Image 1 (cartoon, chains in turn cyan, red):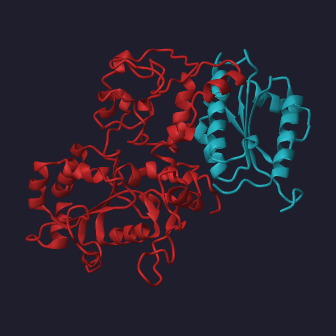
Image 2 (cartoon, chains in turn green, cyan):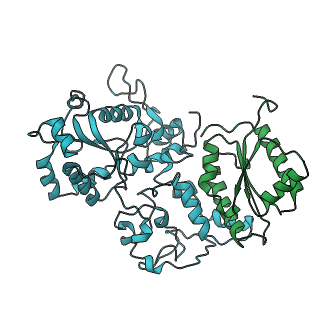
Image 3 (cartoon, rainbow over the protein chains, first blue to last red):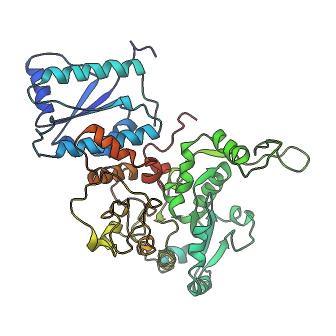
Length: 137
Length: 333
């Protein structure tokens, strides 16, 4: 499969308070974002259960990105910190199991920063397109 | 169930039970032998038609049975070889009730960690590379490697290692490495009394081990760990919760029912009873739990704390790798 013919599937977990609003900003500005990104809105990035990351990969996602509120701006004060700690271990788990951990990303985007979210999305889609599909678990 | 038993076998016949072992260490057999005198009582009420550790029966005993003629078979061990797979399928066909006996049959157990390597790597390590091995001919099991003349073939490894329910439908699970004799006895008595719980139950507690742990009162709130301690590094207190002492204990994310025997032996839980109902992946659940104990404000800091766990898979999937979502490292094999 050539990179051109491969359309990745990437699950983006966005928190409802910052990153999902940033996605809204992108929409309001009528800026297109890659169809490869499938957004799942969650109350908080700290709500993303590591099981969901594995479930996404098992069901055919080629990458997962978790985006929460910037440091110090979590609506629930420390939810994004929880997400950060979980991510460190999930990444390690996938690495030890031989999965390319650049397929799993985490970042922080403020409600008004649609530009940053868009560039995260585009960058990830392009990277994963080059990597090709994730081998079936 | 009694009705079923009587209809199936005639009221004068004792119900037939079989025990079989796949890739296991023998600990699950101990969990049956450890019933002691209770075993003699049970043996009067059942007809044990197959039990390799104790009785010299041939496989023809099983192949000759009608389908479903066995009231139950308890299979321990993971599916590691093609032969084990074939026999597990045979026992499933001949049994009304199939019970996965112990961690390896339940979730792959320690045997499942073989899924971190290819078959070739495993055989090379075990038969050639280990320092205690003397194998000048570099013989590796396979075709033609027998000591007798003529070509012989050993069973092939089954890749990946499977827990029993990934191969055949399993009716009940006796969890644990090994299950406690109490659980085994209670399962056998329930089978005979027809009082088994609803199908596909796991015959342990429905709550986490932490809930029934004798050290629970010493579990502190707000644990913030910068370095996970390891047991060989320093001494630990025999009364205080392991987590409070910053040693990893899987009690909060592991099914109870083991009488906290490791904790009572002053060792932390490693998760052999598997996860609680509704959990998709034991390792992911453990990761979420460990993350909550960590102290970190930045990604770099979180990485450093994570680094203090040198073998994360070996910790969170010690008993469950073969049943986990990631299940094996060697893909496409």
